[in-house]
Image 1 (tube, rainbow, N blue to C red):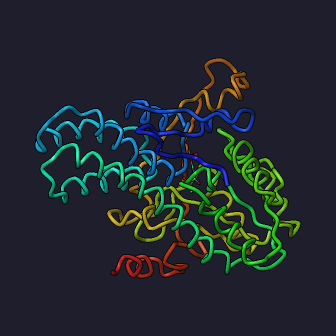
Image 2 (image 1 turned 30 degrees about the horizontal axis):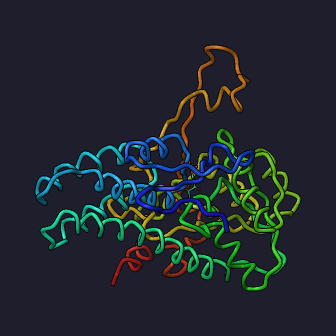
Length: 345
Ligand code: MRU
């Protein structure tokens, strides 16, 4: 399984996903500002992986703080968390991880700054370890929904690369395979940033999972021909009512799946569910640079000065979702009560 991110000798080591699949390059980060920049530039991407990077970014920032007393340390740490929180707006795991690190500081009883720094590093490493364990549970729970000999369509990349490891949507695929099922995958290429072709196809091929790449506009025709048995995607943020924000194009796939009577599943950890918001309408959607649309790999493919829209995510309403696969089990409609139950201790 490919390693996306790790804490090594007081640095953060991340696979540069902007270079995949042509180059496999690991970069070393010593500064939290560089981690924030790496999140913005998609060196590390995918909601849970962004969360892990943010937790490690907080630990990196903490290491550099020179304050000798806890109140000054806390004040300095606010600059670190604010910078990291501004890196991307949609994936709630970013804010979840930062808040977890802040809560850890608040709840710590130590009066020694150096001790607190060490504990923050341990907490960031725990965020990574827990994420991998959670994904394996998602894989096990979701794997049970997949029948032998099924062909699954996925959109974007919700695999090892998008998480601490194992993946959410691709975790479900790995879980089904681990349970002995024969499965095949269609990967949407996922314009404009091509996470499907550059990352999902690469990751599944590395793992010897049968994957066929298609362009986004092919999914409907393949469904019509009866070649797709179910859709599994990840999520960047899920509202209390089950509305799901995920990579742009997910909504179109969900509509197509419903039109063809194909189940549409979302796989995500509880850290992706934002219980502070009621519906998907409240989810902030990142609008990225127009060059992602006007250029492919540095080459212009649109007229100069052409007007462009580039929302990086869309919201799939809960009524199009057949189930949300979490580490605590599969939630089905009605989502409001099902999601509430997930958070009951
Ligand atoms: O812009 P990205 O590549 O960060 O978008 C990623 C996605 O939309 C994923 O599907 C989502 O974060 C789930 S990752 C397990």
